Length: 467
Image: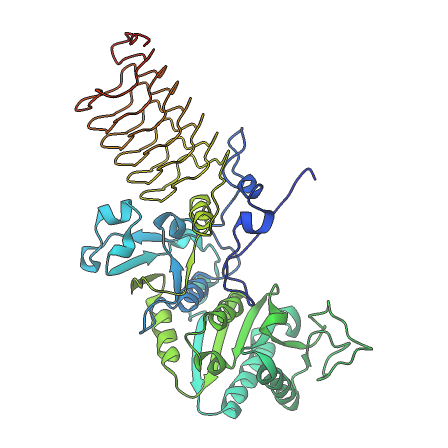
């Protein structure tokens, strides 16, 4: 194999809540191969900040309702790192009224704040339909009965066909929400209702338009559209397809069990099938309906209460992947490239980071006790207050790093490069610095009494006598 292209959308799963890491898919020994950069600076992983297909108001609503950000009982899933929010196109807003301060955001610890505000800039949702269309591109209506819901649906589709000039196939799509036999029955009922109103329909995998059932002899599994017919599909079959005008029917099926994250994922997938306009509908009255209206009114920003006990964390960056792999029991990160990564306060005890590239990374307050960082490149990294007790840093590149107040007791830094390193008030009790280069380093407040300095180049350029 000469080239592997791997694509994954963490919010598009309809069957599993677990977000697979690279090591989960490719094995612990190969998982690191899709992280970091190649030698010429090309990233191995690209995260799509911009969404060109789905209009901004629909995409933000999909994220808001999918994660339960404005849910009365607290969010159900969410992103735990500032850089992960930025990676998918959002900005974290520093707002004193929301009890968020600059330091919390900077240190990726916004979960310590009571509230968080995120905002999606317009340039990350360049779809022009919301700008050109005078009315909202996203609508939601709750009806007293299914009859009323489907009557409105039929009227809207007829208007699309006769007035808006949309084609029935590929430009209009009806998606049935829910699962199991209930969704199957609603799909058939909806299709039949539309046919009675004079609208030609197509149910995926049938051989032609206006057929409600398919048998094994004429089953066409790869067929989703039929010329002249409006496709009526359940969500599992609609996934991967798109249309200009999308109707979502049966929101009540999801609202009945609003805490079910798998069903919220289903709603997210359904919402993001639209390239232009979307109308969501359901029957009855449920708390999730109020939540949906609040999400829509919130527009391109959300202020929500952080919930420490939500069902799932979402991470999309390399740094987030590493943290997730570690939490899952992974310890082999040899050769990983996380240059410039934000790893403030991360716990990587006993991790194998041999030969890793962490140039300019922020590891302020991180725990790397017993970690193996042999010949690792940490030039310019922020290691202030980090703990490296008994860590192996043999031959590591630590030039221009911040190690002030770091704990390096019993660490092995033999032959390490520490030129111009800031080691003020660092703890070096029984550390091994033999053969290390400390030229230009700041050792103010450091006790070197029991440190092995055999052959070490000292800050003034002199060489410590070999024991």
